[in-house]
Length: 466
Image (cartoon, rainbow, N blue to C red; front, side, top):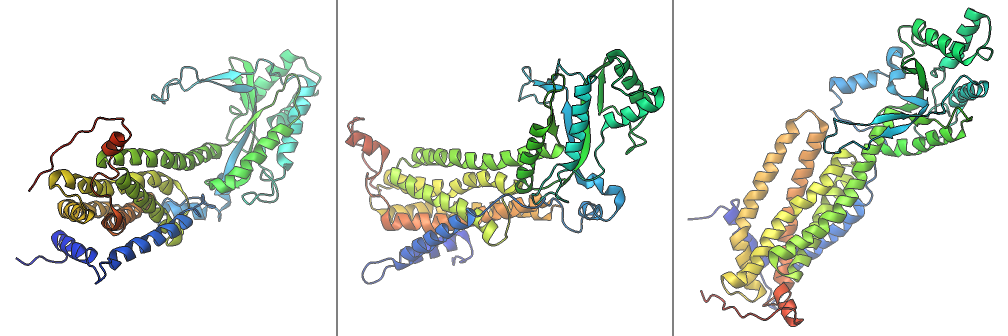
């Protein structure tokens, strides 16, 4: 029965005939050519993947024609949504931090922490009031020359809400005296009345609940709210230097004995930490996954040389996937790439570990000692399985192309790339290298090395004769 060249069996037969082809001098030029070509491409991919950097613009989660993408673009065109497209920035006095001693990272929804308030916080003294007002002016005029800032300022003009300024005006109009002239009891009593009966000028339908932090009738914290010139959903590259400038702003604010150093906060810093964590996680994941993969290969194949060839092949696969993202698709090191970078290692190990195990197992199964017999045994035993597995895995990943979220379509591309390069390097590099320079006999075997070093008693096992 004639075997179709497109079937797994047909592919394996053609692969064996091509790889084992020798010239009159006994040189397998095709096998040598594939190893050299894929080595060169692997080196190129290493260089390309090293150019991956965090995105310089906000990551896009939906296609351009999606209603969410259209809504984001329209926010810049209408005044009603203009300020909302910029990061809300808060400078908070009176809070020292969170007590998270009871927090369990494995139960994140419970015991998230208790706020620790500053026992020295007191806004009534004249020095504290002046320092607070000075902070309002400093925030309004603080400079920022970074790419993500506008107007050369950290804060958008006319967006800073300084409740103390409005309270002083209201207090003078109501009591005909300044806030500096009243006692502490009068100050806080009148501040409570102001909080409950007025609203910010910038938000007539709002209230002062987040700016004037009254808890059980006592002022526990006070905030200065504003809008940054940095837009929301910016990339790590944009946010990193602006975050440092915001920290410098806090360091430059005047403090007193009753008005200690505040902290600055915006929701975008939370997401910024997440993005930074993903990138660090990618690097740390690779640093852990590759050695673990090497140890797994040694355990599975029992041969150091086979494991070294395999780990080089896996490294080239990872580099090829990430390099293709940069060289061909011009992607950045975003969330999908950071997550997939570690996943790729696991997928890349699969084919090489199966082929390497069969190469080593040939000596026990059929008594093969030379590399040519081991190569043929491994390909015949495991080649069709790997071929079929590549088709089914890549095929299943392609269904993600039909999803709406761009994250999933990116994952589909990364899965297909990973399977393609894993298959290519397993057969074109790893197995070809074993055919040309694979270990023979006991060379490279862990047991043989231990016996040679006198660390294990030599055991002679008969090989099968069939």
